[in-house]
Image (cartoon, rainbow, N blue to C red; front, side):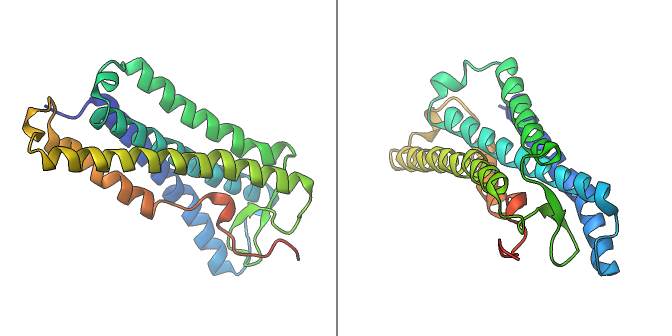
Length: 210
């Protein structure tokens, strides 16, 4: 049995986030690095930072969705098989909308973006260590890093336990799914999490205080 189209849709959306970072973020950063300072002005800085936050947040959200999908497919097939294309569409859209919200907040006054000390990139203004910056950063880290990381750990831990249990009992063949394909995706995604882009706001190693 082929992998469900819904699972493929999540992975395709995840690929678009990588294309966005590679196609928009890296060229601007490389050009500024060669120039020796940020060369795209204030507006370019805001756009660059917003897009990197946007694609980074979307990537984290989609990775969380994939983890939940793997958990339901392998550990709770009774629930996973009941999910419809509409269900998957809604969670994919939610991941993109969540990223839209958090990437737009610095542009409307919650925290702010500025070139980092190297001048090669633009990110959250770490040097403006005020209440707005602290509240935004702490909220984003909680909502878009700690919680997704906890969900992914829970899902993949249970997937690992379930697979080991099935292997020990030699009953993989009795499960109604193509385990070759399913386990292939399940193994690839944790590797994708490992090499995934870091949370955009933590990309700079500059100190909080000037």
